[in-house]
Length: 356
Image 1 (spheres, rainbow, N blue to C red):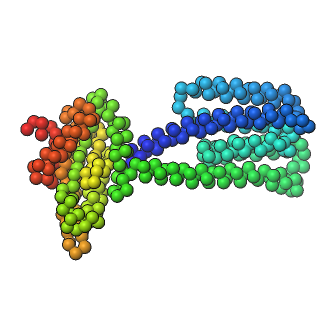
Image 2: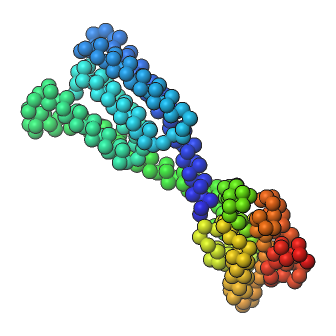
Image 3: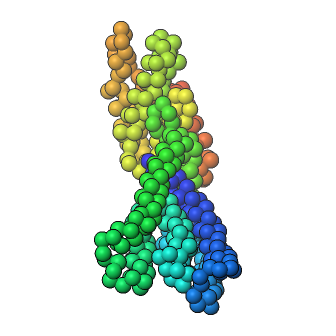
């Protein structure tokens, strides 16, 4: 689970970088559209110098803000600040080009759609509230208190309804996309048969922990686990029973270790467990729990009754039994084969193997 969360964080960072680039293009698009509108003949524009000054200030803000954050990771609060700046520029342009009748009013949709897709419902609702307040203020500046008459107010809200609908529908789409993305990320890091992490997720977790372990700050232990005689189970009872044995072992391992330990399926009948901050004694106790739980939980096979299963385990710990993670995995594998040679259904440590 921790490996999946880390994968999600990395994917979120990549996603934010994409949103950051998209927002930059939208900002310049907004500025260009306003300037192009001002060059059109016969279009009402009051105080063009004010709009030009606001556009220049917006351009300076975008360049300065992005340059100041050039070497920092994108963050949603930064994107939020930029969308508020877009709201300010759009409000000035709309105010001086016809207020509620301005053709530029729809430029607010650029902010609404981007916020709904990237910044979440709360920010989108706040920005929609700001747009609504500005819209009512613009209407009041034209019609005064008459806007509160039913006929006028209902007409104003009818014209404003598309903004609300766009925000609502886009937020729903963003939620569906987020769910689908999370599901795909989970599939990418999960073994289909057992529900454990796959080796892709395990390697990411190993890379994350190796720096602390190699620096001597924290120990790092690995358990290599192999199901004994799985081929015989497949040959005698069928591959469905073999898959049942694999899932039973996976569940036993998962139930025998800590929540922050990383359990992955290493191969067809092999598993690997990464135990961060666990010295050899603690990892040895975890291995013993795995052996006992599996021994106490035989398979219930139709027409065959109970079928016992067992595993062999190899243990190595960094830094006492290895100098780096490559050596750590290699030594745990050697300890595993020592358990196989010694008769299976046991745990061997590389330190004991090296001493012998």
